Amino acid sequence: MEIRMIEGETFEKLKMCITDLLAQVGTLYTEPVNGWLDNQAVCRILSISKRSLQTFRDKGLIPYSQIGHKCFYRQEDVREFIEKNRIEVIKKHEQ
Image 1: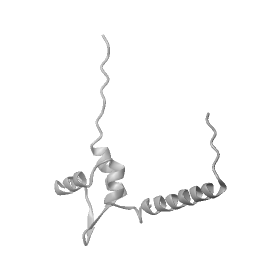
Image 2 (image 1 turned 60 degrees about the horizontal axis):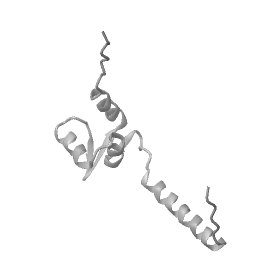
Image 3 (image 1 turned 90 degrees about the horizontal axis):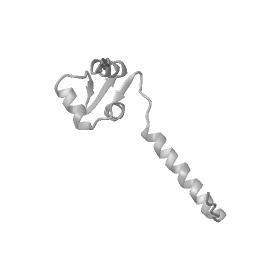
């Protein structure tokens, strides 16, 4: 393991940068409000792009509510969507 020494002032600047970064990350992650998720949260949960989510909406594959230009999804609907698209694995028996 390599040990590096840094000046106290540099260390304090580094701590401030990390603190600021954590604060920014905290603002990016939002808890669902009353069980509702926005596009960003659903895309993150499903690991898909915004365009893929748009396609799912256009095809009627996932229910949503729209207020102005913002779409919201019930957590339960997202769970049901995942469950509906679940693929069962059938194990082949060796003979």
